[in-house]
Image (cartoon, rainbow over all chains, first blue to last red; front, side):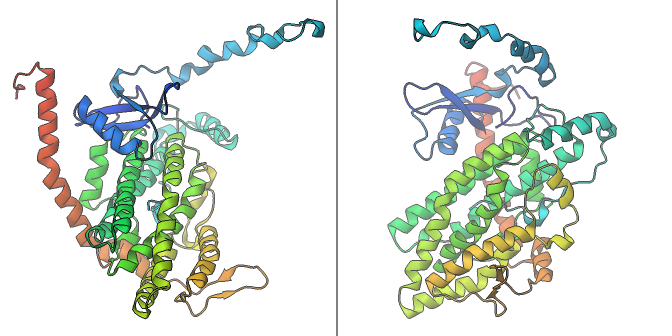
Length: 104
Length: 334
């Protein structure tokens, strides 16, 4: 739940922050579910298990130091992502194929 | 239980930050809110919005943590293994919910250590409901049924609140919490259908928890002068009185099914509105308990402080071990 890449604004954290990812079941990607504080990786895994998988939420856990995540700047959102809005030729529906050709 | 245990505490902080002078950014921010967009941690936000959220979310988190204490009191004395396992799971959930909420608050630029420090110093508030004692096993039933019931009523709208991390935490909490109220009601039902002594125990618990549960929704709208900003920011979507009425309407028939009497001589069905009209709430008592003078305020804080102090060596040892591992197994430099 912590913002990846967001430096703490207050006093320095004594206990490092970790981002938690859970694979719900084999065949699916790990998905970000939240964060935990822990002194090291082994304790972070233990905390993540206790906090985020009490009801069979998954079969695999990743913990990543929050400080290792580099995030894009929200101020750059338009510059980064808006240009794709006009590139409709990247979608299959842009192209006309006669009905007689069938599904393509 | 969890809940929106922030009750009256969810009042916005007055706008004083220099950033708020930036009318254009503030207007753009409000336009995003009005359009139903979610605000995420790195987005610009007015300082008053940030401070209001930090206070509300952290008070909510503190309530989850302190809320473990009244129920924890009965874990070793639960009447059966089934009840004990359920109560343990519920109390563990409260701890988890506190952690989700602290994490959501931390995205606003405050550290876990600061927030816990505010609780332990007595500076931060938590829901007044946890300053009442759990005198009998029936209280565990009443807490699940009434206190979690009131919390759920408060929390459901928060799942759609404008701040993304808070809304996501609430969705998770609401999902996990639906069992809490049902297990409480099941305890009440078992007692209500038991011996005369068991039924009397259930009635006594209802008598003691009914009014404090109604107080969980916070002061009446007429006294809640800061609701406007929270409503405008879509942190809050319903008024205290509106949610309280909803809770009473839902709960009275449940009490009737149990064959228990709601301790309110003024309670009656209003034929015109279809709602249950209820008697006056003792707000002086509410303010007294919130202000620190409830039956268990001192004990709750003392327990949290002791837990913090007793666990200090574990945190220190874990950090020292991690530092040593980073240094390649050598003792860390002091």
